[in-house]
Image (spheres, rainbow, N blue to C red):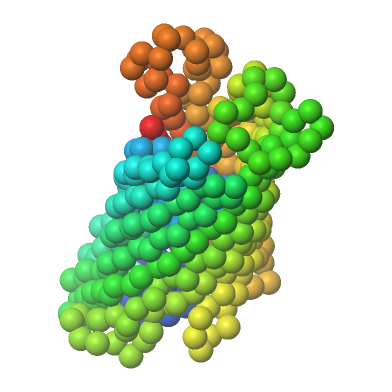
Length: 382
């Protein structure tokens, strides 16, 4: 990309601001609060009540619940555009992998524990850029990126209710390179996230409401699962700038969220589902920044999903988002009706328990640098 003319002042402003001030007007390393996964982004940036492959990024407690049913999980970014109104070169995405195991307690009627570990990584970059003056002469060659490497551990429990608790350790870095002396900068720091989630799954069958059993009827029945979640994020000391302690604190924030999920099952297949999530993010410390968001997700045969949501960042402007998702493995299972084939051999088990999902989301926010921003990713679990 080449920056010329009227954008010169804006580009120079970028050099004088941290990415936090540019993107969120928060404290140092505030990019840690950016939502760059398409399922959550499509639901208005609601994150902490979602139990999926992305959980380690936003709520390590949900990672424990995810691995009550799954052994492996992974995700990787495909295409993205973070600030399309300013530059198509801004790319943001995340990748990660997790593993978990379960332990039965006191026989068939006992509970189940899970233990899980995960690694995830977020990166936002501008890439190599040229800054030109009005005559087309090169003023500077620069690049910019921020990244966070996250290591998570979690426990999950399922007995009459589901509860997950976990923690993540994050190593974050914000790097600006420049050929102009004195403009190069590196900000680095570490932080901890703590999170929990509590779910109350209920089953409605034959007109009666009861607990959701592991062995479910093949006839038509319904599931309703309300949940509540909390995350305390970016607990840490002051970051360093070029190896020296800074005068700024991390953007320390918390999230509180509630969600309700409903599904209709028929002959062992989840025929239709719906989820509503509401979430509030607030700063912990001297600031009073606060934002709210809500989102919906509608699903059919656990294979096709539509999402939409709203974000109110407290800036007299709302962001609208939408997204879609496809579970390619579930779609194939529905088509070929293979779920009971193979008499339990390893090929049938692999086919029935594998999930391969493609997600896409987009922001529709006129008169904003985020208008048209989009993310896509691929996720896998078994």
